Length: 396
Ligand code: HPA
Image (cartoon, rainbow, N blue to C red; front, side, top):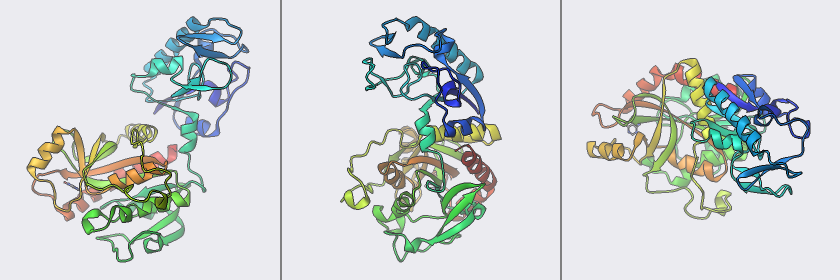
């Protein structure tokens, strides 16, 4: 995948003070993708060193009062062209900078205070379909022994757990809040494995419990809270689904958002008991745009066919009626399944970075789906799914 990166994050001494801001997580990502370093400020002809610049209203000024709006615009345009020409899907941009800042920039008082907004370059990239993140996002997604990647595997996808070099196994029944009577429906043991996949620290949960088995929202999200307590910051949910005809095909998919149609929510009740300060959790970008972009880039590079779409979580266990399928189609749903939404809500509430992957095993409502056919379809796609997950772990 092609990634645009602020050159200062790679160690180039192009900052106003003549220095750089090398970031190890960004450098490591850059070493594993096709990287395109940019510095919109030097590209605009500004000298190094120079006084610091900030956006002041719709102008950009150096601290000595020099107006550098035109140089910033020129540099931003040149670097936006470079991003377009290389087909970058991701830009890792220096946080808070007047050209590269994403979400927050210095507020024009030269006092270190921040205001909401994008730098001049980030404003230009907006709307180009390029996912923009700061180095802080890359860092926050970086796995380590202290922060392993949690992977929760759904129906038929539990095989991935055999890739783990195990360090420790944890019986689900020893996990706080996990129901003592729960048994796997088929296949894998209810045992999490802490270890590594290709040297990346992970905790793999090779199966889950569901609302349709009669468990509560709190019980089905116990694994998420466990992963968080173990230090996981990234959590990958993999689930089998039905594809909604007209909106998705069968095969692998990346979840972009969801509709919680289960009628319950794991945040109902005593938030403090669940380790939360507040139950009022923002659900925008619940499925991390950064992780989605990495997943898409890996799939494209490896030639793995992957679609993207909205997931509708239903209770089940009956499959959808034709009328329900028509309703879901008209609501913009691509995938329908009986898990994941509650877990994603719980993970987002805990501040985790969520990636949702699905295997659409059948067309929802096609009249032929059985639990066995879902397992068989998962088996047919196991190799692609495994290559996709390993590719993603490699880039984190
Ligand atoms: N509907 C709901 N869940 C599913 C389906 C489906 O068609 N296939 C696999 N999980």
